[in-house]
Length: 204
Image 1 (cartoon, rainbow, N blue to C red):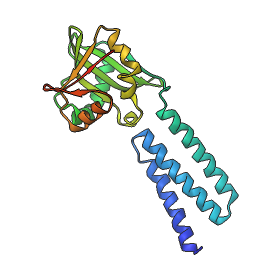
Image 2 (cartoon, rainbow, N blue to C red; image 1 turned 90 degrees about the vertical axis):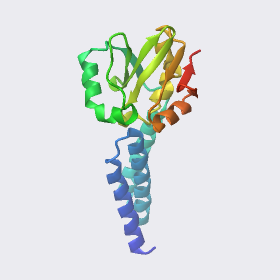
Image 3 (cartoon, rainbow, N blue to C red; image 1 turned 180 degrees about the horizontal axis):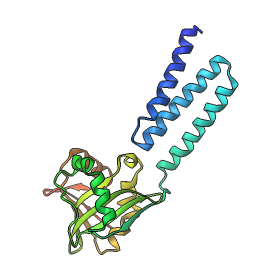
Image 4 (cartoon, helix red, strand yellow; image 1 turned 60 degrees about the vertical axis):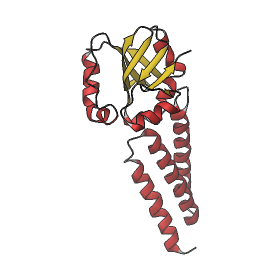
């Protein structure tokens, strides 16, 4: 094989590894890094470099293991009750205000009496869900997950196995009026149905 082609494969592998460090999503970082490691293995085979092959084969396996863990339903995800005026919550929302405004531009912060849950991933804050109670109906006004964990199926857990955070509080019906198309598409994927007023999910 022409040496220039071999060098090109090496450059592509290097570019993929560098690009992975620019990813804000943990899942995308793992995918790009995995592809980069595999390309490096090919590069090592073409060069006949055993150390290069072993190192990147190990990196590829680690990326596969971490990616499987990232997408697993068994992740340590939680929804922790927190006061609407808790300093930690307000600091978290404030630090992500610009990102929140992209999806919920009308969100003006938690109010007294609101239902508030801080979403955790492996013991670290990953997002927040805030709504206004109305009998057994909860009017959601914020469903936010940090960009790093947005591909980690936290929403699937929250409205699936984690829905007990709502039902244990007495809610059987969730409603929301999405302001961004991305939010509407996400809610459809996890089971919300379109209504004249917005979208709803009935909890079993």
